[in-house]
Length: 225
Image 1: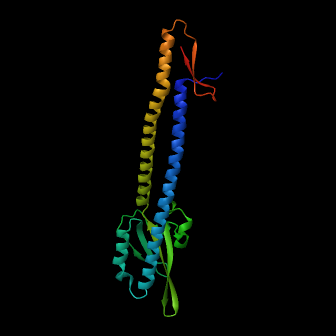
Image 2 (image 1 turned 90 degrees about the vertical axis):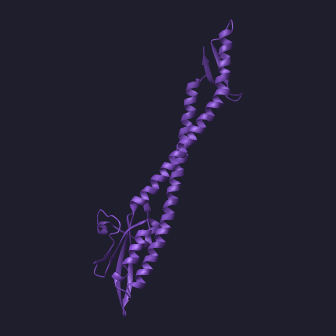
């Protein structure tokens, strides 16, 4: 006949609880991460496509110096964008913002074409690129541009989400632990304490007392005197 001590029973219950909660909140965090990635990806795709349209329209009529202020403003107001590089047809840099702090040039960082933005994880990507087709009369000229992401901002979003998930996890564990303790106290510990007192004051106490969960289950908890 198998038996289980109160201490072991509580440890098993708490272990199952913590494992279950960990699994639930891990999946919740991963789902939140995917949601953030989708929202940022959609926002970045819209911003980059608008930038491409702006450059295709204005590089035809104006020199790059005439639109620098607009490009600088894009970088200032958009927390996702850390830098923009624009290259002429011979791959010479004609625009490189120095508004935000940059530890290195982005020309050595591989960039993913903006058309594939939906196929990659934003959290694992630092740079996107696109081409700009401009006609000089009937002759097309191909400029190109790269948009470097602000990885610090993106990582901060993930850290905030992780902290929020951990806080929720600890609060649920804390509240459920209190609830479990109340249940165990009133339905197991107090009845067993009464049973112990009965056995202590009885003239012929039995060696073992068993607490049965219900008729369908075998004996679960053994209290030794």
